[in-house]
Length: 305
Image (cartoon, rainbow, N blue to C red; front, side, top):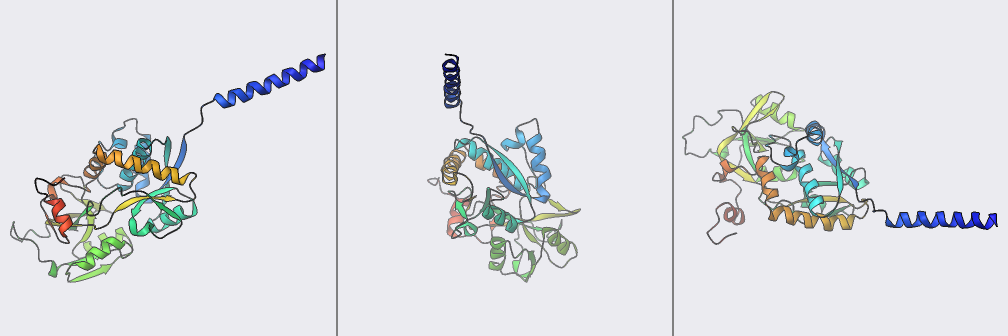
């Protein structure tokens, strides 16, 4: 009898455990690893730790940390798409290393250009996060570089010497399309600034800063946009998702929903503006590599969207 009672007690315990397990909520939180440049990691981690939501909601102007903007866009797109996840920054020295981390599964998601994602079986690609031509860059030179020119005169590009990073494929493509006096390859951003500071080049391409003077600084060297001219990058940018990420297809679907929501409610534009990628002060500046499409976007008619 006692044996029978013991068996029934054990059976009841198993049934209780099974019932508890079936009614317990499924754990939805997961970790999404985002590669972040060494130079930007401190700012991203400080934002994550901040008691204020402002930096995580693009309510602050972040003068030079595009990694923080990408962190914010990924975090918001995941949540808007219905995925509860914690975005965790992981250090990466450069973009090429970040892509290898995504391919190997050492990291999960990053933003990247369409040409770096398409045709590679290691990656999946979301719908466009940023549209072709939406990212604009200034021609950054030392302060007062064009002060001798007339106020309303555009600089003669034929006389200017540029420096860029050949591995930054799209920037290099734009620079090569301009009728420049010369184009020099640099290994790093630090070297680009040093080459300009030494007088061996006149300018490089950089995203506009959200500072009032739009200046950017590396190692104490300050550069500022040449007034009146800019370029646009003629390619779409997407979330690059590792195929090794669990339920990668479902993550893509969620991110696509999130991107549409963030585009429709103006959040993407807010982030772009507060990070200088879209700068209201340069709206009427001449786009050196403008196509009919970018010209229509920059100067729409009344009936345009």
